[in-house]
Amino acid sequence: GAVVSQHPSWVICKSGTSVKIECRSLDFQATTMFWYRQFPKQSLMLMATSNEGSKATYEQGVEKDKFLINHASLTLSTLTVTSAHPEDSSFYICSARETSGAEPQYFGPGTRLTVL
Amino acid sequence: LAKTTQPISMDSYEGQEVNITCSHNNIATNDYITWYQQFPSQGPRFIIQGYKTKVTNEVASLFIPADRKSSTLSLPRVSLSDTAVYYCLVGPGNTNAGKSTFGDGTTLTVKP
Image 1 (cartoon, chains in turn cyan, yellow):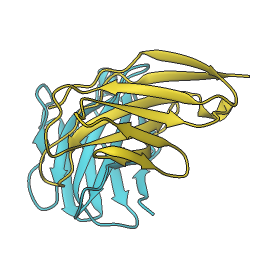
Image 2 (spheres, helix red, strand yellow):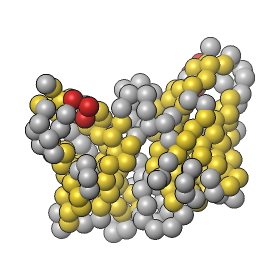
Image 3 (cartoon, helix red, strand yellow):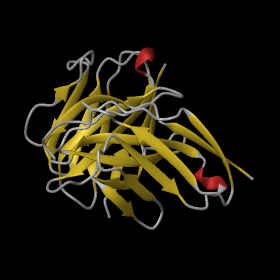
Image 4 (cartoon, helix red, strand yellow):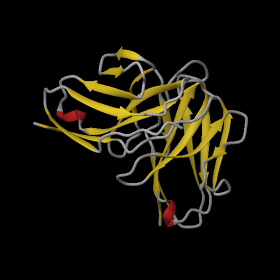
């Protein structure tokens, strides 16, 4: 149980294009999903917290107009990197928490984004 | 937010028990302690979670003293495949009660 999937697992795009990453909780309902990015040999950095049916809460320094987050259902959240640039190249990881109880975050496998 | 401090790296040999300690001096009353394992280019994998005293599952044990200002992840009889980065995460247990922040993690290297 507690499986989180991400799609795609990797993507290469040209500078200026937009990329959408999907995060799904496969066997549980997630009121809250989190989006992280991770640069090589660094820890995970929280970008935003996404609650189903409401606007995402972004961390300081993360541009909400560049990183669009939609949490339309209890099992799906999407992150769209708009007008991507090479400096947006990173490993993006989502996590999901079950609706009730003191459940931990379960993480997806991550998406490697490379912007040329 | 509770800030966590872990050793940057640790070395061990196959078959040994490994204990990784995390300090979280300003842990809040409703915070839980969760440990994750991460391999390169993969998302973190949940290992164990606890609130106080001792928790044990099929892969690890978690020891939390009464003051909860630290915690120790214990991995029994490690193997080469346990070489990874281990993160201690402290944060609220209620779904909508807030967020957790990752520390720098501990890189565990298991040698043959």
